[in-house]
Length: 259
Image (cartoon, rainbow, N blue to C red; front, side, top):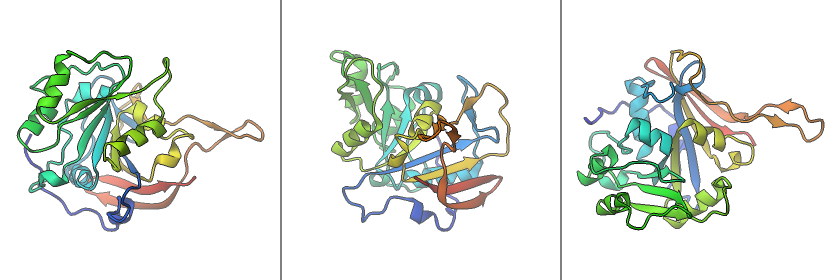
């Protein structure tokens, strides 16, 4: 796809980004665009939400992270390039794409955008995380990834338990990915916003678009939290250090989870 003309990033955003001085520490930024009814998209449909200024911000943010992470559903539906398309971005500022694909159902080919992007030297090849019981030897997709510098990363699992975000973060650190920008999809975002995973989130950058997608959209709504004292519902997620920026037609929330 064509390069993007960069818009100036909003003032004060640096304090919500990983710092070069945090060597060896893990930093996770959760960022996504949502409609007024908290939907990311319509099921099985790619829906652009951000205006050009907010889209430029997303690609600016990618250059400050070692990796950009999405779930396999997003990879299948969007066929994304998973790079920064800002004009003049060097390969040294491109993030490593990470795709969470437990059962290796992503039918990646040499024509997939992320592969073509890596082949042209405009981005890095993806790491695909799969479960240990998935057979990958002899799989053509493994070879396709390795041709452009990517690979299949096996995460050891026991039974059918869900991946732990703590295990995933440790694996990413092992791979030298100390700052990660998580962009979606719905299951990934809601999972990170769950009470047990929220301490891993260092910053939230959320774009809100002036549009309703309507009922049955892919929704961002973390699990309810019950009070240990009386079993009543409490606020699922609260924020601190909240700042708002207007970018064109959109509004962007910059914040940190209030644990």
